[in-house]
Image (cartoon, rainbow, N blue to C red; front, side):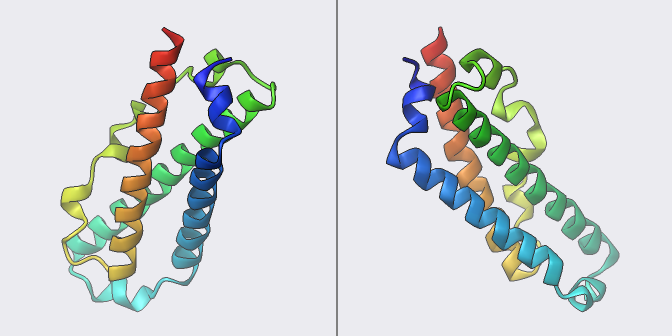
Amino acid sequence: MSTLTIAGGTAFFGKTYGEAMGLVIEARDYLERQDEAAGRELAPVARMQMCAETLRLTARLTRIMAWLLAQRAVASGEISVEDALAEPLDAFDVCSAGAEHEDIGLPPRLSELLGRSRLLYGRVARLDALARRALT
């Protein structure tokens, strides 16, 4: 049995999945209700950076959830470990970069979501690396 299959049934995996889903919902709620006036008050360059960081948040959360759902599929026998690991989690630099941009006057809630998503992405990337080592 591979490390991934074992991970699919652990409390740690369930906690990580729950945390990721909660963060997705928080981000969705924030993005649906964000104060457009706050964005309009920013200088054009800061507004562009806010848009870029919003896209980074979305990309991180999408990659995290895709990875976690693939691991669930492995645990339930729907796909192979090799299929789940076909593309490394950190294949997109946009997801791992960005910490240097989180303190540029972005709305506080967006900065908080970015920071939490970056930390979660790092944890899931470490799980991905462990799973890949277990295959070799």
